[in-house]
Image (cartoon, rainbow over all chains, first blue to last red; front, top):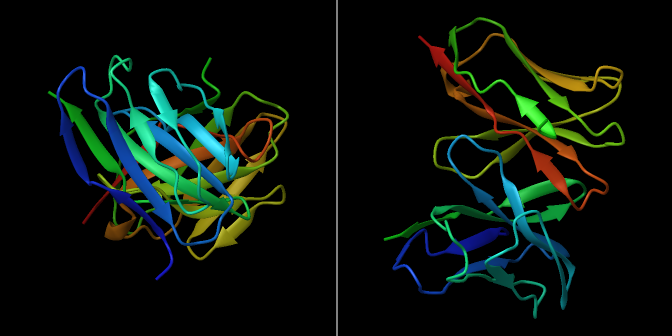
Length: 110
Length: 110
C-alpha cells in the first residue's frame, strides 16, 4: 500500500531534549512538508522540501530543523530552542495540488 | 487579519438538514482553493478542490467568489458521518505553500 508513515504516534520528551520525528513516503512524491497543529488553530508550515537535498523554511521554522537526503524521507528535529513544542505534528507530500498526510505524531513536553 | 478565516462553530445540525459555511481569504492573488475534512485527532483529508465555476460532488457543493474573496461549502442531506472539522485551504504565492484556516466544526445530531 502506498502512503505516508509517521513514527512514533505519541512522543513524550523532557524539556531541554532534542527529538526527531520520522516521516517516510512511498508515493514517489517530490514535495514534502511538515506542519504543526495546535488546538483551535489551522495547520502552520514549519518546513517544506521540493526536491532532495533542498528545503525551505515555513512560517514557524525557529527551533526546528530538517533534512532531505532521500526522496522518501523527511525527518523533523524539534530542538530545545523550540519554546513551546507540545503539539500535533503532521507530515505531508503533494501530488497534483493535493496534499496527502501521514497519521501525525503527538508530541508532549513534560 | 488572518490570511484565511473561518467560523469555528460548532454548527449543530439535525440529520438530513442542509448546512453551509464560508471561508474568507485575504490574498487576492490566490489561485487554488480546497476544502479538507479532519476527524477528531486524525490527519486532514481532501474533500474537494474548489473551481471558479463552482463544483459538486454528490451531496457537497463548493463555490468560489473571487470578488468578495470567499469560498463556501454546502452539504445537503447531512449524515451523522459528516460530523467533522472542515478546513478551508488557500495557496499563497505558489502551490508549494498552502494557508490553512482553523476549521469549522460540524456536529450532525440524530
